[in-house]
Image (cartoon, rainbow over all chains, first blue to last red; front, side, top):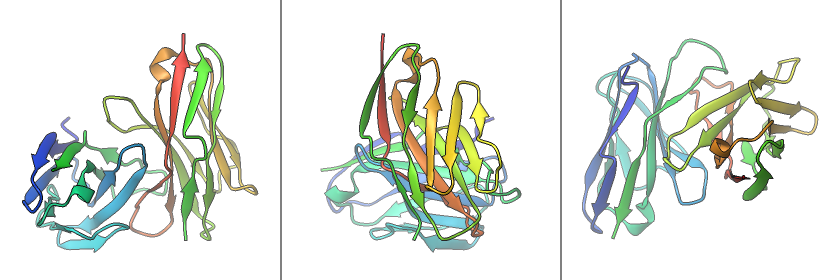
Length: 115
Length: 115
């Protein structure tokens, strides 16, 4: 089982550059999430999606965009990279069936440095 | 607004002893779920234990137990018989009963187990 796969694992960007963080899951989960984790801090929600074609902002969406054209993929786009976006990015997915106790599955993370 | 607070940035525990990691939360939703995740130095997020707001008994999973005090809005994680492999960052998280399934995380507690 591949689960949630994030690529790349590491990336260094220059200020003003753009990139897309890829996230794919093979569990047929409708719910997907992007979080960022700053050093020594907890995870903060950037964007989420409850199904293909449906996305919404989380707590810290500024500077990011997402799309959800398929159930499997949920890419995160950084248009103009800034040093404040240096962080570890986690993608997660969750089945839409079940209650509050349904576990979220996390990818391995992408460590992004903007210089 | 929902909020999770972990007031212990770092904790030390002697191997084979028990340790309690604190977590308090705030929500106006009567139906919610509380989660604990472990993040080792390798960076992945590992689900440990879940407690529902309507659960009558405290959750237990092997060496992990959750001391749930609903009136105090606290959900402390107890790790019994600490092992060196328990050294990691630990996050408390909450999910409310909205249909988005998103998790709100605390700041985390770094636990170091001494031999």
